[in-house]
Length: 492
Ligand code: NAD
Image (cartoon, rainbow, N blue to C red):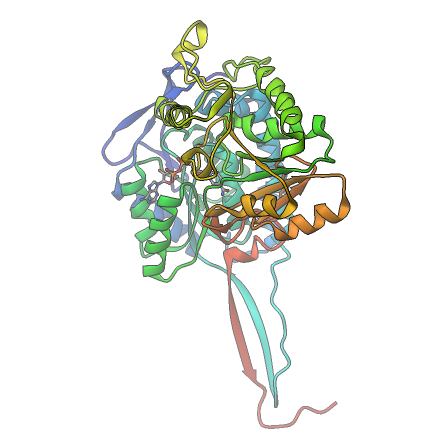
């Protein structure tokens, strides 16, 4: 299936397609051509309130929150099966809308299926505890769903990051309202329909597309909103945290990164170069946990840089829909300009652009937002491209002379999402992993994650976590029940 310019997607509220109260539409563009591939209805704040109302009603009246968790599990497994059956359709839609390669979109869809299976397995294992207390009393705790949970997603992994929090919230018995990024709403809207077909009751899974500051804030400030899961920029994350704090509701924040990749002299440099390339050029570098700062031992600097350069120059740029493309376009012309701006500033300040750095301005790719994989060397640690999140295929290189200096450079950032270490020495691997200020560390591996491993950041990279065994619990609240058994002392 391929989306046609005539395809139109409505909002999904209360189990029904909705054109939105204003009847407005927005064009959705293909980043490889900047031509429209579809239109979507555009919500207004009143549509956000309508979705919250539908979710609250479904939470109170449907079987979802109160029936056996095993029943929810079966529905979630059915949804996983439906996405798997239509995996190619989902992957193509994601690629057309976001630009990533088909190989990457297929990987995203496989991760989503696995996530739904994983959280489905947890849906009937949400339980409290009994607590011994003095006297003739019986004390126990209950884990209850929160109610209506709001999920706000970014454009870089449109469906994966949406379902990463929607999945566990549903498994715990909540009703969800999802707002995908306006640039990339298609797969979320398609998924809501699949959820209905799988048996999710009407109103339990709603999707509204709209402007963040109006529709997003209308969702978060709605009195029915019981928690917010936000993945996106630090700036907006701060705003969400403020709004949630005013309402005394929890927020999970998955924000930006400036992740270090530390390579010691004894590392397998061929494997490291491939891992570094995957970690910064994957998804055209539009990854929160992109390994965007290479911190390399000075003694192997030239050798490793040569290998990384060869990896970068060996990547074939192309529309994600072409099977042989290794790297697709950036999501939008604005994003491309932003990224090129970082490179220009670094070059003007005397850094060396080892490879890449320019928009593809000729040939068939010139209509799209294509940027050659870029490596920048001879940078001061204070350079903006070293300190700020670029969110594009741009690797900054720094060198170190001692392990202490490596750790100091790695931690010299306001972010703390991810870090990786490349060494064959066990002691170095474990010692440095402990010293790195990051929520996730890989050793001799590019960024990698699984539904069963926690995903979250230190410092300004976020608050709370997604994935892992305890994620479903984080979409519940705990109630303590104390029962007085009467005045008689219990007899054995
Ligand atoms: P963004 O913050 O601009 O937008 C994210 C979402 O928030 C969108 O749906 C947007 O419409 C909405 N939004 C914007 N303003 C809002 C407001 N005032 N109230 C409510 N919602 C609002 O981020 P983006 O440009 O879509 O994504 C890129 C960012 O996301 C990068 O910083 C990246 O590091 C981060 N990210 C983090 C993770 C993670 O897991 N830590 C994963 C992917 C992306």
